[in-house]
Image (cartoon, rainbow, N blue to C red; front, side, top):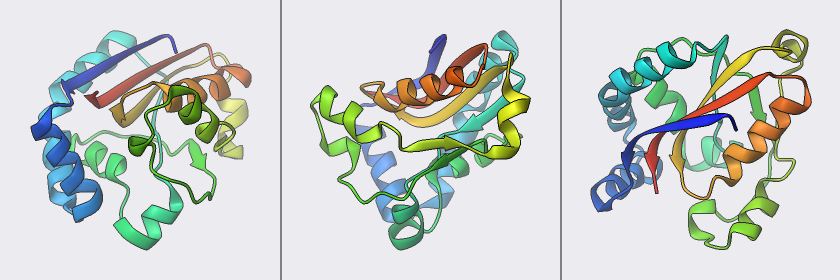
Length: 165
């Protein structure tokens, strides 16, 4: 990862927000969070000048069987950003990362869980990418995504997270 920026700390209020968004189905709260973070995100985009902006997709099991929407995608919509869905997350049933405190276990669980949409692979070489996620805690997911992108020749990878634990 070549750099990162976060919108706000992950305090007890923010934990409640994320819980309502992810487990309560409050899509409108995701839009609100994205709208609040919009000036910070736009400033980071202006500073880093990425060629592509994407986001880390949610686990397909949670997307289809419990949430019904992708929280990060909805936050991005709230910020009114144009993004490309470059990353794909493999189907894997596992315990949510938020419940795993051991950094090595978190790294093991995200290893090889992401792939890049085939139509983007050649177009990303030598480019600067901004990846958006909802929460940065251990950095395991961000590191895995950065390694994957760098392996296909992406020049720089930056992360913007709405919340920082």
